[in-house]
Length: 326
Image (cartoon, rainbow, N blue to C red; front, side, top):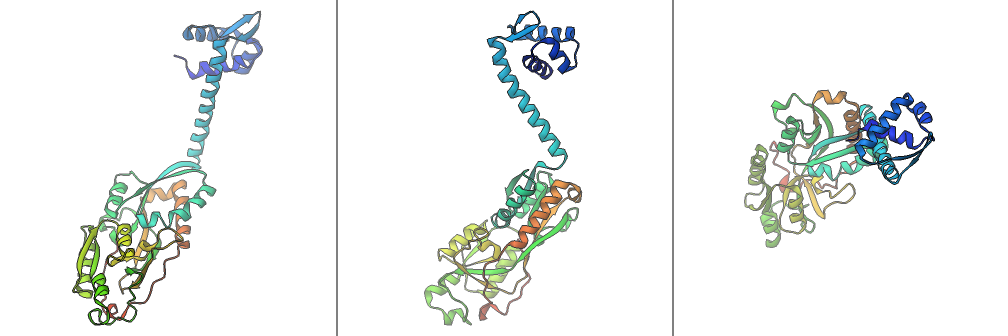
């Protein structure tokens, strides 16, 4: 089997007028070069050069091999350059676990800046729930994760938290359901709108967060029923937009992308904001490629414009239950 060194020698000979010149280019004694060429032709099982005195001319087989050799050497040059860029932090793959709502709003603002500053860097995005993001982080399958701070267990103190942004917990309702003056839904809303308000779309996360949401619904909408349980805010927002019911969500979930929002109304509910953080092993902060990406991500998060949020309607103004954001 041909070695890379043999291919390099063949390429140099093919681009030289004679073995004498090729030996100077390669820094090999001419007898040694002749032996290398003879061994290469023996392994190839065919003549690569037609010899006339000290001059050499490629045979058809030699011309075929030259085309392939140039492709191989070009690939090796690209590999060498790429390895250098990896070593210098100018090329690499950054694996990131991220909530879907962050992936569609923050990441589109970050990637153009990343492409401009680090054109050789590629993002491997995992859109997962908080528990899955932590599993990937513990398994060292991602370099960093973006999730809500309150979904990080106390056992995760081995990771560094970097604040990115905060968004309010809101009640998302269909666009045509105006709650701004509603003090008593049973008295102030017609039956059809009461039915929509009491049709709740809940999240089946199976965590303390889900239980706190259930408690909030019991306090605020005692006549509610669970219309649908889902694992994604995206499905919930599509159902709200279609007029099927209402959902308690972080405001960022109401955005389709950095520019467009779902066609819904959002009302503050007096609950703590969801604080989004980047979570990563402390040693990754000392790796240039990760620290630079984190800086870009923080800059993109600062550009995110949350959708318009209305003040709490009168019937939502009183409850102030603690709620951990997912």
